[in-house]
Length: 314
Length: 260
Image (cartoon, rainbow over all chains, first blue to last red; front, side):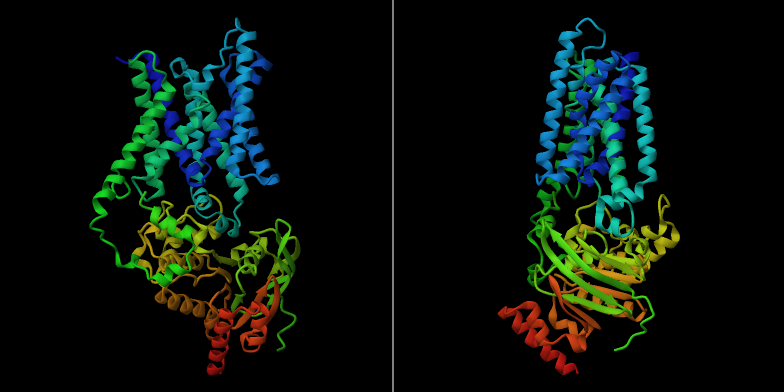
């Protein structure tokens, strides 16, 4: 039933989903989810330049180029944040589209100029082409998944502290810059290794959607991370199977669509935090007495505080 | 008041100036704390109270000035310094329990890579008990009232086992029960020989609970023992002629006289 090729792709997308879910959990909680998107889009010109430099089909060479320019994009964001007064979202928008625009121009240029050279079809990196995944690609993904898992587990305590309370982290003497850099590197290599399969435009979704869906099911970070890995892996598997059985459907977008279905289901049906659960309960609120606060208590609270409390049902 | 001059001060802030976007928010601040006890930093909104403790701890860069604790740079004494940030500074929807939050206080002394073990967990439980929150250990932190959240932050600071504490408005927006607990805790910490610097907004409670007071409005208007420093002239100089504040001041000074 499952061809050899499908099996390779399945293992690849499964591992990719798991690694993304793990790294993505911290990226989302640290509010750095869009760093992945910046890295992914910024990776495209590096990929092209790497091809122009080496004229090689070697995936590792291409991905190294992608990683360098992806990280360059992230560094430009950091520098602009430091030296301009623009807000971070604006900066990310600018950097991401400029790099991506340059990348698109280069892929077209390469395709027109080197039409007859094997591997010149770099446009496949835009939405990815999982179906042609090789054993070597899967091994790369497995290596990245292993390395990120080890680093995340070793630095679990430090990354949790950083994500929850950066200032307290600094007061205790941790190098928040080093930790942020580590998290950025993990994000970048996870994104880059996913590029051939899921593509520049969509890899960041794998980083963001499964952890966001996982948050609905639990109030514990460790559980959230496991569920995010599960959701990421499941999205990879289901997306791959669907695209393998219905001809003409690309794998990357289907993986993302699967994770979105999981997200919507979580948002609707998760106990305690889901919409359906809360809809049923809003009438007969069983309010814990400790929750009842006097009005004077709110007087000193900022509107943002109240917002967080009211919004916590979502 | 002649202290043992030879001793290095617990905290020494010298000539500290801090600016946001080139606008000075703290100007030439000098502060020396020589003996353990409870110090309140008071002043109007925008006086730079929080900025002051945050720059002392190195969270906000200084334009000029030096800060030392026990004669050394703050960076070298971090394991002896504890911090209670403002409650609004974190995302209370973070997937973490009360107990795990308090456990974070022990991370500084644990160092890189080491996981909290039984010793750290016992310490965290004791700290939770000290603030009366042991029954909430497994709650997600967002499911607490404001006062309870504040107590969790205090318990986390206790778990740091520090000698010098900085607390940013630990009494802001808390219920009466929590205020009681917080003050009792501050008192017992002080009796244990620790030094606590509190950014405080409630003038009325200053004479009752604090040993020293710093009146701040961008510059230090006055600082010293509450008995001699907390008077209407200094308060007026700090708060200016704001009517509602003046009433509070009168009340506070009155209260102080009664206690004397």
